[in-house]
Image (tube, rainbow, N blue to C red; front, side, top):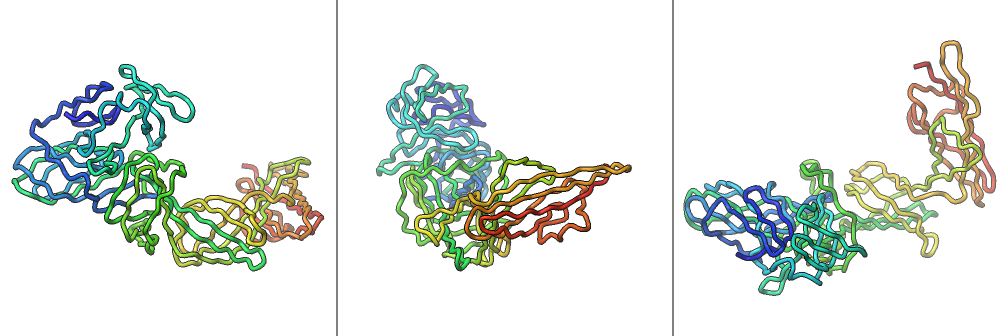
Length: 465
């Protein structure tokens, strides 16, 4: 029996006996396994931006009538309980995780001094070096320290192996226990979820303060660090929030070696159900440990407004301490296409090598407003004081608030005052009419002169609850 490449593995249909030298499985079927070709590319893969990958793989296999086992190579660390097998007269009776048929991993002790992957629950993967093994214990140097990993640890140790043609093989095989109605060659299709790489959108923009134009370019960054090589004939990048049974989440982006890509970029987004899919015209071909980037959409240009925002809870009293106003860029997504969630970095076109700030954008449909929070305004500060509170015989309270804004710059600035009122509060009749917001979160626009200050006051009342 070929020894596995995994330090620890759990299965549902077989009982594993743990040793560092290898794993022994008590399989429920004693028939010989039929092995699928592990070198052929899978039919299709869809990478989800929120932390899932779905693979569809069709293979022609020679079957016997009745119960038998099929060895099926898979990408990454699969979730075998998500597997759907389709074929004429085929019944899936169970599955095991088994060593890959394409490689020769050997026992864990043979990897001492070499790199390994540490796979934690939730999909987080770290790279380390195996230092030593001692019985059922492994010692791995990772992140500048030595970690002790035992059979009871939730962390799983794995590594890539090399196939006969020199390519890195898939990380695992799944052994399928099936019952076939008849013998002969048949085309089977497996669909499953796996820990293959996630992707995320990345936007870089340049804002011209004179014209108010914001130009954005977008990339889809596919991080295959810590995963096996992927070779798929067709591929899609899926943007949107799709729930997963295990609540998997994407791990932070880790910039590794950049992989060259012959892809001309992602195609136009396709609305599928409640998500969008971006097709990759050339499929997906990315080596293990690489980071690949493709253009997500053509560069876009929108009218944007730089906004200074001084925001507080109405009962907050800062005393004499000043708070900085927040700077943001606001625009409407009038590009006619969705903007997937991702990191956004904005440069100031009016000055050489000047970063305005970076933030995150949520999934934004066409026509929706966007506000990019870029940081704090150095010169725009303010205080927020509760100057008076009183109560009448009914227990209702009246509160007066005074906001003083200061501008140390040499240009006047428009500042949005945004207040969050307590529940059931109402503005007094003599308060200036808000320019935006809502009844419980009113907003006012005020102009703060250069090297000067501006005072704004308002009153609200609240009935006894």
